[in-house]
Length: 321
Image (cartoon, rainbow, N blue to C red; front, side, top):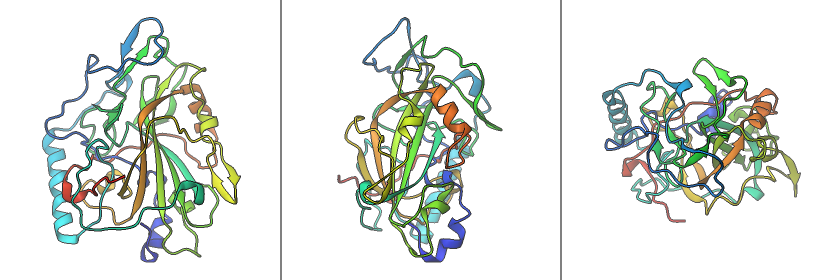
């Protein structure tokens, strides 16, 4: 993914670049989610249950027409055919088809790599598993789009939180929102830190990269998973690790892809990344995320936007694992 030629550029790339899904995530046949869309019954149901497969009211805004997204997809296809990019991300993890001709080896197990960065995106970048409800086209620049938890939450879990969480010019997070969290690993000898620059060092010109992706839904419930605990960092066997990385969310889908980010909606990413995406969604306390965004070694204070879902076979690797 990172070639020596691109090292100066990467030091300036924000962490969001390694995980942001296409602005128009949905294929042409897919409509934005509605409250009644195919809800999945949770393991524990409390009080009145409400489906959350729709954008929260606080995030409503102007959505671009399909023609805008179609034009972005056409530009990406043209760039592929003229420049020969490798397989891209994000993708539908339930669709194994891919026909990209560029091949690279998968990165090692994360236990033999260094955790270098953690960041999150509002809306799942990938589609599949329990996150299949399309949020809509958004603003055409990665905001207000992506995929949402297609299950149900209780009224208590959806109770308003006292103040905005991770507020930015594009809004803030609230109970019921879906996020995709990226635990980024590198074979370079580095310490965890902010941006993708933390994944590089002068001694390794082309480190292998891997992203462990976890989709979460925010709930106003302090008994839900604690984001502070999930993102704890420790040194194990000489490697920086996230010892509480969830391992009970189904068999991860492993595939060869790329960095993401809305900047690649109309051109391919030249970088090579091994992705491991869990298919189930984890309920996480919004209070704990609020605390993490207030202070963390990665200097993250808000959720990033997403890149358009990549859907053309020539732009994807085949899922074989």
